[in-house]
Image 1 (cartoon, rainbow, N blue to C red):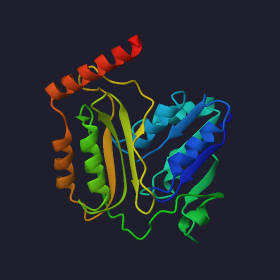
Image 2: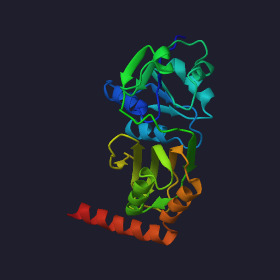
Image 3: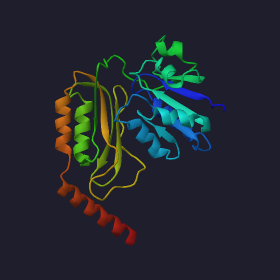
Image 4: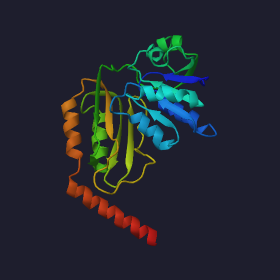
Length: 258
C-alpha cells in the first residue's frame, strides 16, 4: 500500500514551524485524514495540544506513540512531522526509514548557509527571531490539574520574558485559567509580544481540570527553582477554584437568560 508524501518541517526555536503547518491546514479543504507528529517533547506536548485544539480532526501523535503513528501512515492523505531544533536533522531517518519525504525549513530571514539550507528542499521565511542567545538550557514542566489566576499569569509571564529568571529565548505554555478557559502563552526573543490565545477547548468549570497544561522554557542561566516556585505561588487552592467557577457559572447563566 502506498504512503502519501510526508512533509518534515524543521528550523530554529520560535521561528514559526507549528504556525506554518497550521497555515497549510487552514488552506486545505479538509483536515481529515491528516497526521501530525512532533517527537522529542516528552510529557509536555504543547504544540500538539495547540494544533489539535484548532484542528480536532487531525490525528496528533506524541512521544511513545511511534508505533501507532507508523500504523496510520498508509491511511492518511497528508502527513506532517515537526522536528524541534533540539533534534538532529538525521533523526527523521530513524522515524520514517526509507519512506520518501519533503523537507521544509522555516528560517529567520537573516540566517544564511546553515545546516537547514543544505537539508531542505524548500525554505520558508519565518519570524525574525533573536539568534544570538544561547539555547543551552531547557526547563519543562507539566502542570496538569493546576488552575491559575489570569492576572497572576500575566505578571509571571512578563517577569519570565523580561529576564527575571535568566535569559529566555523561547517560552511557551498552556495554562488552565480560573474562568475555565485554556490559554496558550508564547514568547520569542526579538519578536513582538502577543496576547494569550484562548484555545478552542471546552470551558472547564467543575473542579480541577483533567487535561494537559504545562510550560517549556529555553535559554541560558535559567533559575529553574525560582520559575517553579513562582508558578506554584500563582496556583489556586481548591476553595478558590470552586469560588471562581461558581461565579463564572452564574455569569454564564445570566447571559443565557438575557
